[in-house]
Length: 347
Image (tube, rainbow, N blue to C red; front, side, top):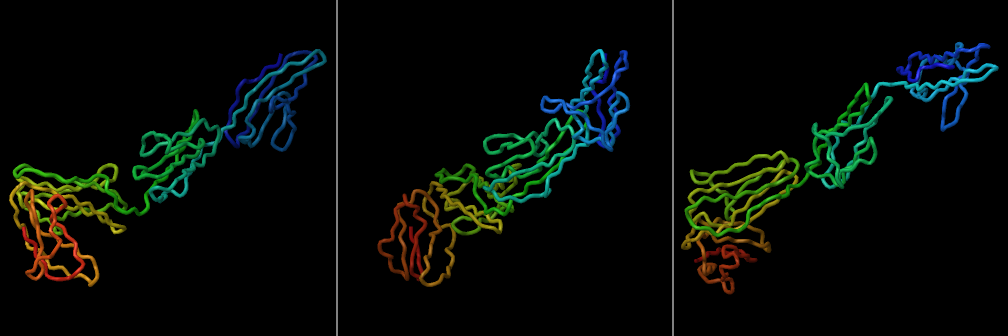
């Protein structure tokens, strides 16, 4: 009967011995084989591999030496076999390069984790410490490869691959940063008609890289901050800039065209809607002088509040401007001229 260890393990570079002992008379002889694809291949002695009686000795073991070994002991009366599984381990190692990668929003991104060592039981993927969620846009192409297509703003962050086996783990990380991106509004406000007295809050939410700054204007003029008007902004965890203007005890003169403008140096975007406050017509501020190049389109605003407005008419040099009276249902406070003259608006 031949006797051998069922499982032997060692580290890469070690000297590993696979013992095999058989009892019988005449004394048995020994031969070792390795099983490959269901076939037994004889072990050939070399500078690394030798046999001492029934023991197979492997010097400077490599991961490739791992496998299923068979010891065959025989004499003139018969033969016996013993099976040993050899596992040669190597420290796990992972790497991802470069460690910081910049990708533009809308483009695909492939993350490749190079894993070495033995055995490798699997690879875990994480984003910002949490388990990476896979969906139709974020997919695992193979054990070592993740593809994101297209990249979105929320994808920026730290990605980790963690290789593991029963005795060892190794991890590598890469940071995804976003390329420059023009501002884009994620949320804006709509036209409203309100009574005087209550509070009013307007909000604009913008994204972009670098983060945009948002400023507010009323009828193309900066909005002064006072005891009734307050501004604020903050950045969400998703990287959106939230800007708001709060107006308490709304008055008729607070009505007009409100605009939020987001700018980050890469680009600019603006949103405008009218806030109508019920009340009689009132001129809320002096119109500003405007200088333009001859032939350009000039937009003039009549700085008037109140709602509803039945009619606004314009004069140039004390003479009525024909065919430019505007019905109040068509944003009465904005008008476009293609000539340059002193204009006046009357309510």
